[in-house]
Length: 234
Image 1 (spheres, rainbow, N blue to C red):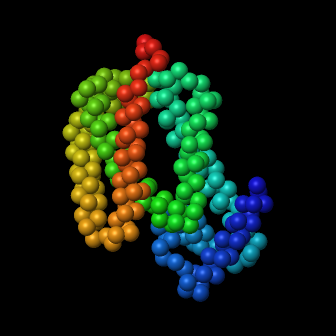
Image 2 (image 1 turned 180 degrees about the horizontal axis):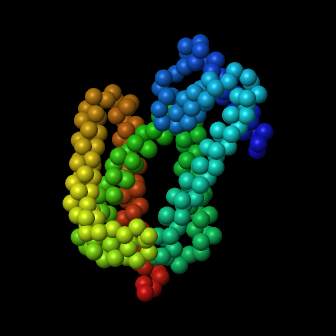
């Protein structure tokens, strides 16, 4: 594994630096995942012209990126695992296996050229701007006006070294919903307006991979929500 990281780092450092100085660096890869695999390698490669130092930097960078990916995948996996284990009678090992296999199959799309350069950024943009932002707005409203900020503040102060006062209640009840509401509305308006200026191929890709992902995530959430509880609630 170490040699693979090292070789991969040397290859990318050498190729990207050559492309950059020759003026054939593709600007469409300067955002999204291309930042990690192209922009950062080029930036760090300028620290030294020695191929050995570049190889060491390449190994360290991609090894850290690999560890960051593993740790991030574990946190995302456990977020779903915890919710599913609270509702369904299923072993953690079996559930983790199912999610891992499904995630591997789904993410295989991003391993292709089109998936890495276009679909990944498209899906990530729609999930972040619409799904996560909207869920954050719904969550803060639900917690503030149904569960109650006072009860939540008492629970937080009971286990936290940093105590929060009533000002925290006003932030959750008024400031945060307004801020998130403006963000969500502006994201939807901006996204819809952009679709009017797209060509047919770009529009189709946004509908299929963008809005399709949003609809799929909402549909799966509704299906799991309507499933009966198999674990007794204390």
